[in-house]
Amino acid sequence: MTENPDIPEAPPADSGSFLGNLFNLYFEPKETFAKIFVRPRVWMALLLQIAMGVLFTSVWLQKMDAREFMKAQMEQNSRIQQMPAEQVEQIINTQARFMRTWGRIGPFFVPVIIDLILAGIFMFIFRFFMAADVSFMQSFATVAWTFAALGLIQTPIMLLVFWLKGDWNVDPNQIIQANPTIFFEVGSIPRWIWSLLSSFDLFSLWTLFLFATGFAVAGKRGLSSGLWGVGIPWVIYLGVKVSFVLLFG
Image (cartoon, rainbow, N blue to C red):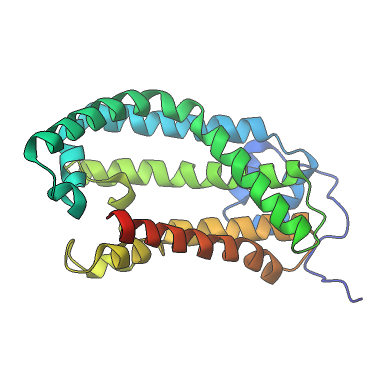
């Protein structure tokens, strides 16, 4: 069996520094993941994720109007629009209070939960469906480091766009329209199509690429195998997401 020359045969002797690996992950992800797996330092990547989340929510929740935000979200839901005004008002107030509370405590533990769940899912996929020798720690490190690198870039950009726009009540998921929805006005196309198109943003595609690279290195496979391993679950996720909008949107 011919070995892929692009995949390192043995772990590098130098694990690199945390900041050095974080920086190099943007430019040399394959070589950098090989160093990361020598010494994962997952807890440092998690702390960076938490710091970025706390920074964003601290600024955003202070400047946005939770009630107006929830009202705008409710107005996009056809089922909500059919409810009595009093019931809608009650839902808005309840959701606004929940968001203010959850937004302050969520960033401290949500990243850890999400990273652990995704790490388990991807390890299962690559080990049992693709017969790749990927350990849980390698899977955990791939997810944690990818999201840390993503957050370090995405968080300042989102805050900057909010500040330039001057409207802090915009949905954070839509504040950076680096996806095909930029060519459409809100409400001009069905919500399920909007939900689908919004998923093809640059940050999501970059995340998938880093995931694929990390798992390819961990499993000593080519990038194409990594893309299949992360691409199929992502397509399933899109199907569930669109179905949810069709049923409840």
